[in-house]
Image 1 (cartoon, rainbow, N blue to C red):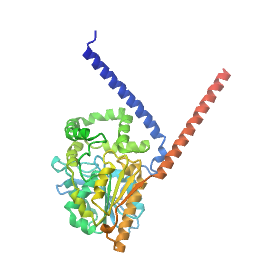
Image 2 (image 1 turned 45 degrees about the horizontal axis):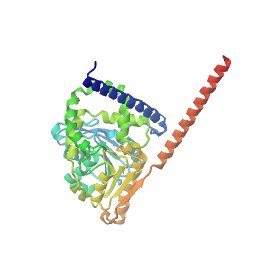
Image 3 (image 1 turned 30 degrees about the horizontal axis):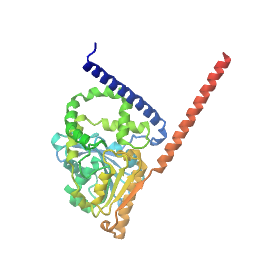
Image 4 (image 1 turned 60 degrees about the vertical axis):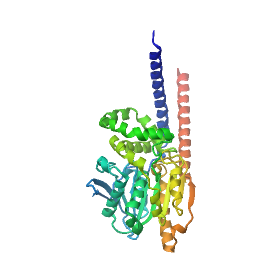
Length: 405
């Protein structure tokens, strides 16, 4: 006779197995749906070759990987756009913007933040937002020591930009004409909630670094698990990165970016993100043209986090993108690029007219990616039509076989 305790244990195991199986089935269906959205893939894919690659030495001697793209006929009066990526990403995440911005005539500088992408792995002592800000200064000094600048930061890259504003106020005052904050926050509290509430957020924030540190030595053993459960992995990345339909290629690209980050790096930077607080720093940007962009479905940095930034900057423009998650630059690339270009146009027009940003009203707008919505509906309708045609042909063939027999 089976004991009650054992029966409960067997029941729990069976329930867990059933739940895992159900999750796997759901993930497989979602993957199939994403594969039908290949029309959303970028025309030139996600691979990109930079015009220039170089290593920049940080203040502590660490090598930072930097890439530079320039148009063929560069106008030297135009600002250089410096782009800083987010936590667990790399400069590759900007691939769709860097192409479009160069096509628009701008020189673009991108870099892998320490311990990310192709930059060297930092020691624990220097895994701080302030060090990242000093790294950004080193990148600027090496690649664009003169001329106007536009700083663009996503997530942790936005935090880096804020700390840079505080630590290198003179350079910001003299050379930075505009700043764009994408899916970021001025304070770190609640950043690990993952949309699950403060209780879960605190647990993740406190236990996360410890758990990841214990798992780090075994990361190489996780690769086979990743391959076996790729659809489940993609479903999780899709859930926390996007809020509208995206293609399978886009989800895979995002998953590879995120999961290429070593677990010990994730553990090292989580405390820095949690302790981040640059709300008071934002006052230094009162005379700069500032763009703040967020997605309505961003679970990591929801629109209220952007609102905290905008409240400190009366002349800022706050753009909330409907049906967008945290990786907004991959989910709605044209919208993001257009907003950055409009930001630069505003800054140039105001400077030419002698208009002070501090005298301008705060602007809040909600944007819908109409072009993408139409493409999704058209692609789904086409897939449905093709599916019906195949089913009809299959049924006709089956009837013919029966008639012949």
